[in-house]
Image 1: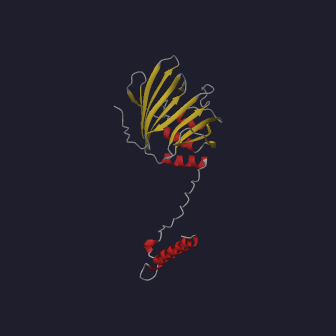
Image 2 (image 1 turned 90 degrees about the vertical axis):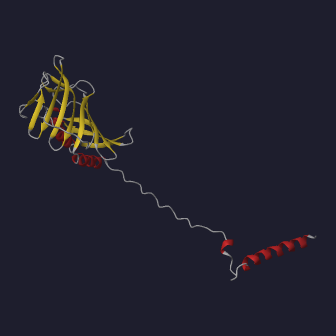
Image 3 (image 1 turned 135 degrees about the horizontal axis):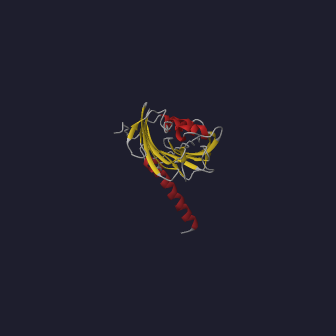
Amino acid sequence: MSRLSTHLTTVILGLGSLFVLCCGSEDGQVAASSLPQTTPTLAASPTPTPVPLDPQAILNRSGQAMQRLNSFRFALTHESGGTEFLPGMIVKEATGDVLNPDRISVSFDGFFGDGYAFRMSMITLGADFYTSNPLTGKWESVDTGVSPLGFFNPTAGISGMMVQVIDVSELESSERDEYLLGGSLPTETLAPLLGTTLKDETVNIELSISTDDFYLVEVQFTGRVSPRDPEGIVRYITISDFDEAIVIEIPE
């Protein structure tokens, strides 16, 4: 077969196929099933970028979250040494429960100036105040104005602290679930936690705040707060068990 014949055969076959495609349906239209089906693609909506909170906004939201709490547990610890709550009475650690609005249970561990270790506890129920004798362990009802630990009020200390941070800034944190804020605090703000404090001074602080619920979970204090503090002293307050069931009653 010549090249011309071959070419004509190809053209005729092509035209025949086109005729069948066009006339294959009764109305002369191309059958829908014979055409490729396409599904329109909708453009994905862009995911909005969350606006980061500034440090002061984080601090404010944390303060509001802490004020709404009904209960929590806390611990006051020292990197080394302790705080002299009274002359010759050094408290190394204080742990306890708070049931708002006016119930507190605290245990203090420390030593007297001569190295004698002690442990004593305190319970407040509204206007009623009880302490355990550090020598006998027996509970006694005491007037808050007389008790050497009558100043201790973690709720007031934490609330005051949250609204008086100076020059707050956000620090880089190694934890993904926390905001880490830095700043300074007037030392007198800590009187409900540490008793007698320096006047007209500040202490450096770091606050760890949960990104989930904005609860304050830890505060680090670096520097002197009380008159007898050594230079460079470091304290921590850790807070936990938010709104857990806590019972504080009159001691036996």
